[in-house]
Amino acid sequence: MFCPKCGKETDASGKFCQWCGSDNASLPAKPVIVPEEIEGPEIGVYAGLGRRFIAFIVDIILILLIGIVTITFFSLTNGIKYAYYLSAQNAPISQLTEAGTADAALAPIVAALGMLIIVIPWVYFAGFESSRSQATPGKVLMRIMVTDMEGNKPTFARVTLRHFGKFISALIIFIGFLMIGFTKKRQGLHDKIGRCLVLLED
Image (cartoon, rainbow, N blue to C red; front, side):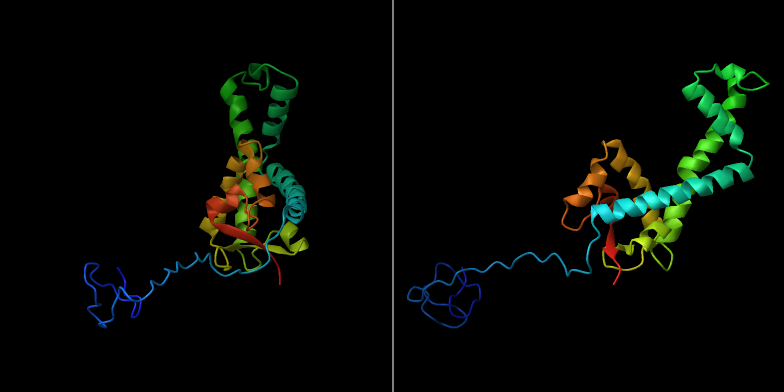
C-alpha cells in the first residue's frame, strides 16, 4: 500500500508509515490518479479525402502522359498493342507476332505494362514525395504534402513502402483509400503501412 501522507510505498500490515511515521489508519486514503495516455502533439492540419482525390486524378493524368512518351521512346508500343488484342479482341496469342510463339508476344506485353503500371508510377510518386517539396504536382496544386509521423520530410524508402501499400488499399475493394475519411489523422491503409501523414501546407 501507499502512505496517504507522503505517497511512498509502505508495509500494508503496519499501522504507521515506515517513512514518515504517520498513522495510516487515521488518514483517509488518497485516490490513485492514472495519467491519461498522450498521443503526441498535433503537427498540422490533415488533408481530407476530397482534396487528396483531386490531387490523385491530376497525377494519374500526368503519369499517363509520361507513360506514353516513355513507351514510345523505348519502342514498347507493340506490347500495348498485343495486350489490347488479347484482352479486347480475344486474339490467339500465337497469331500476334511473326514468330508465332507466346514468348514473342508476352515479353513486350510484360515490359510495356510493367513500365506503365509499376515503374513509372513508383518513380513518380516516390521521387516527388521524397523531394524538397514533399509533393507530387497534383499535391502541389491542392497545397498538400507528405510527411513522416513527426512532420518531417519522408525518405525515399518510406514513400516507396507507402506507394506499394496502395495496391493493398485497392485490392480490399478500395477500403484502404476510404479509410482516409474516417481515421483521426486522415490516414489510408497505405499511409499507415508507410507511417506517413498527408498535411495541408502552411
